[in-house]
Length: 102
Image 1 (tube, rainbow, N blue to C red):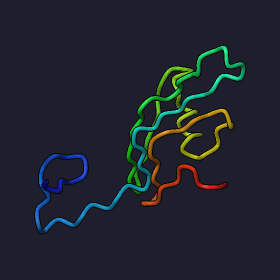
Image 2: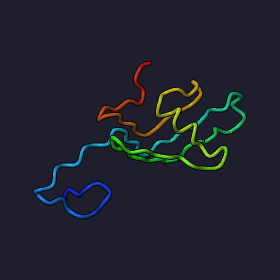
Image 3: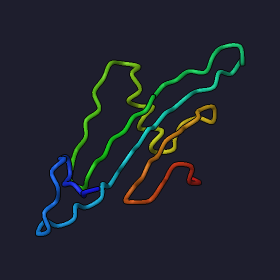
Image 4: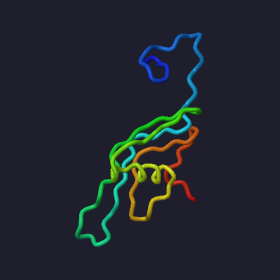
């Protein structure tokens, strides 16, 4: 497998510097809220989100009300309520941060 440059499928040339890893990387993030009464089904709020943000980049999340923007960011920050189940990967400066203690 050949290394490729950031945001491209073109191979890196030997004279190119190795791209810096992203400051924030999210892969396959999924957030489900368990119902409190056990009669209602669980609610899937975020399904399979992936993103990558390099140092100096700005990312805008745009979507309709209720589309999961805030839930996504709260999941990344580890600030969701206890009935939320988070799956996937979140890396901050190369360190996995999902499930870290507060």
